[in-house]
Length: 265
Image (tube, rainbow, N blue to C red):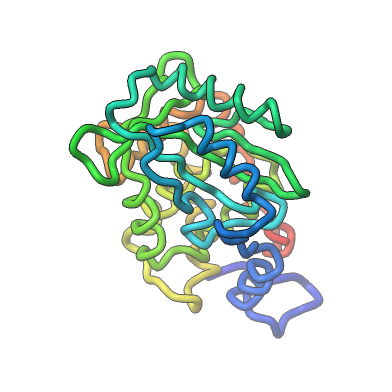
């Protein structure tokens, strides 16, 4: 049984309350053909030269889980498999090239470019030999893990077709409210794992959201989460123990609150 919204609003259902919060927070990404980002794409093409295979929408933008205040568009920069530079050198070169023209910020696997009052997250990746959608990505999150082998298209389809987009968005809002370091792919796959035996649909949204928080409070630090496209890639290894503990403690505090409006708003 889900929590009541608050003490003064007994008529609005918890499910509708979460839908309303989601609608107020979710963002509509701009298009890849938006003229405001053309200078960024031009610089990406100059940097990649003949090694560019494709540039396409990815991440939260493609999954429909982007929030206001986050990136305005997520793009994947696909390089050909015969690109000779190492992933670390490519990432550094990519960052340095863009920093000559724009305000940039290194992130886990992406580079955030701020330009024209927009924030664009770009992920450079190298295609695996004889593959269409599989890539190697550089990650600077941990010194003992510099390379990820994954299929970003599979990530998108896994989330879009999961029936859990609303629960994912709700947990992303909760993450931002609590100022937690919780990588989006890790968050998404944790939600899917925690809810794998739960029913889908908006009429179960509040119960499912609270179930995820209870699951985090009980199991999070020791729960292994894997890349759906590559079982050897343990996504949960992207966080250190103290970071996982912070997420668990935030969930413990949340489930102790009396009303849903104290947890999500």
